[in-house]
Length: 327
Image 1: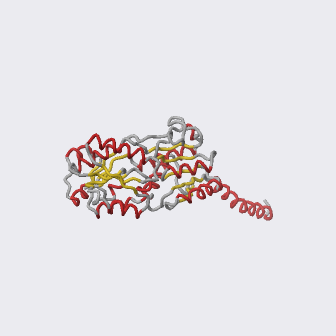
Image 2: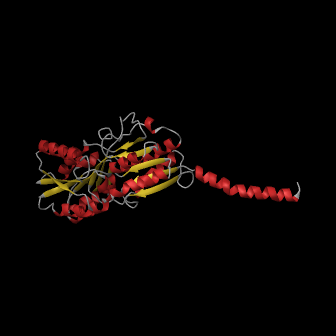
Image 3: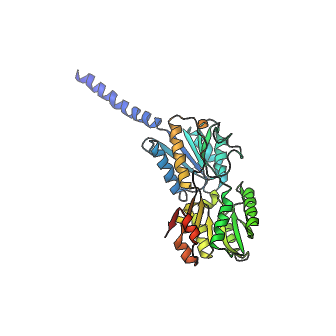
């Protein structure tokens, strides 16, 4: 080969390399992660999501990009964030942190696949046609289980059997609040237990609700399963400790953070499953063919350190049933 031809060939190859690199980068799928909370509060769940993706062969920044959009507890920001992801033409949208994020994503696109966590019954709320065949462009994992509300009341009574009243802290913006209140009131009548309902939708309102426990003569408090409360886990655990009130929470994460006890589906496991579903869709599976997953098991977690601080002796009946005991 002549020298001039060799230099021309070498130059052409060098020019082609950046183009090839850009084409490879452009081919990398992008997952849009839409959530109404903050990255700090959802860090363990994002980690679980990444683990699920990894189980299907996708590693962030290696063969998949994740574009995170956080609402910072300001739901008014969600429509703009969702539109940004649609305009970017992401491959899949993960909508989590409350059904409002799910509805916003669904309103923004009917073509881009959406994988979600559902905090309420997704069929009753019209997000999917059925659990087995969701149809449309959306599927995911449901953590909804209204039947757990009476179970948490029974758990609180075991810890504090002589409580004059037990408080139930709800988020009035949660669409499932009315149903939850009816459930706990019905269970309270059966048990002969007085229950008072307290409402909080902001951090200040959470503080006020706990401050009012003495006025209501509440010997314990049960916290509703709600995305906002998950986002303020540390605050709720701190408030319960400050007021020396036994608190029963809906998720293990509260008990690990210092709460007395929790009973509910694992939110970490739900996000791992969301990661797996996301990976399967990236591989070409139609979301309409992926059934909405329900919790396979519920876990009772007890924190004996917190019980000691509160001066509570944990009943043997609870310890025998506990899936995890933190000492």
